[in-house]
Length: 303
Image (cartoon, rainbow, N blue to C red):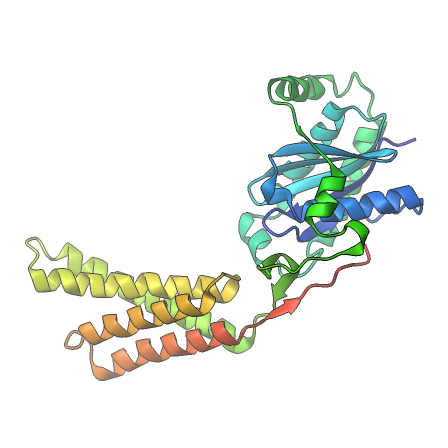
């Protein structure tokens, strides 16, 4: 019987599943373990980089680094060193295929489901490889586990913390773990492009002014800051549009005010049309940020 039964790649900050092995077992105990793995995935940010938990006849192992975590369900006969060696190999394969930008921009569950072929190949390799073939890798992992043992978690505590015990579900103060943002629109993409253009123009003018100010006068320092601050504000607006952030409205208003005040201060170095262009892009971006709402994420994705 195979010792490694199931594997999943998730995003650490919100537990969003990125990919998973599509083979399936219909035993009730395994289905319950899958449910507990999903629950645990939503709380990975609160746990150390390596950990394990027991569930009936199975064990759940996870290993996280950066914003990506690999999780697996194994039989009780599977050695911990073998499970973590498998997770480490899976993590390296995934990061070789997808960079952190792709992971951060993923907005739907199982956005990289095509990685299942790599998961299946790696899982088969570990299930059928002899102990002598994986000896060196297991010895390295074993030494690491002896030096820093993995955290041992209680799945019952995890269920209680997520409000799942006895069917009670608490009200969350932060919507981010259970909600995702609506898809990016064409007008939103246009606002991003224009924002990046404005940031680049401000940065270039600011650097040019700073380079040619050997003995900077007080008013020139103000002009330099008036270029640099709106440049940073434009980049922040791009981030606010792409990613959910608490107190988003307040941040949008602060960035909009920074851009408007900076361009007002530059009156004289810029003509009226240039100022109107920068301010107009700032208002367009602010509108796009505030109108890109959150939507509920489905609780079961059918994988």
